[in-house]
Image 1: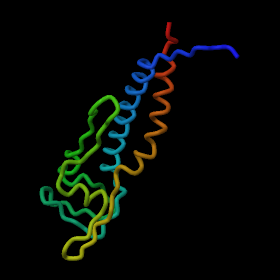
Image 2 (image 1 turned 180 degrees about the vertical axis):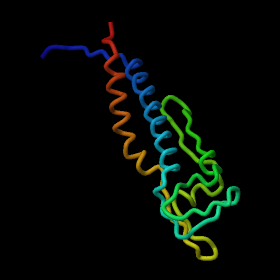
Image 3 (image 1 turned 90 degrees about the vertical axis):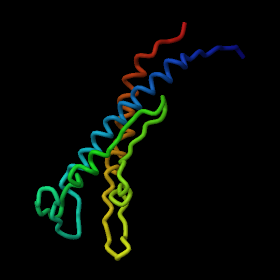
Image 4 (image 1 turned 120 degrees about the vertical axis):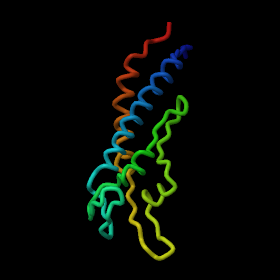
Length: 138
């Protein structure tokens, strides 16, 4: 049996995955923003907006007079970690739904659900293009 040697350019391979990973997450963040702005979310009652006086029914968006939507954050923490979040004290109730002390049911409006489904495909497409640039080691 012959001996053989396999060489990988691991630095280029790993670097070739980090960039598309974060690019795919940036695409996901834009999709989350679209979900927040989309007039597709069911709400159990009409609401009068405090600032504008506008009455909104259902389906509607969850911009929440910009408080919720402006609290959206998307950031690269390191080479392999990307964070998506909403920084309002009621963000979990918006996304997961809640039952208030008085029994009022707030429906879940998971703005991450659809964008998360598309994340692997986006990453795969971007990673293939980036990894095609990796050269064989000397």
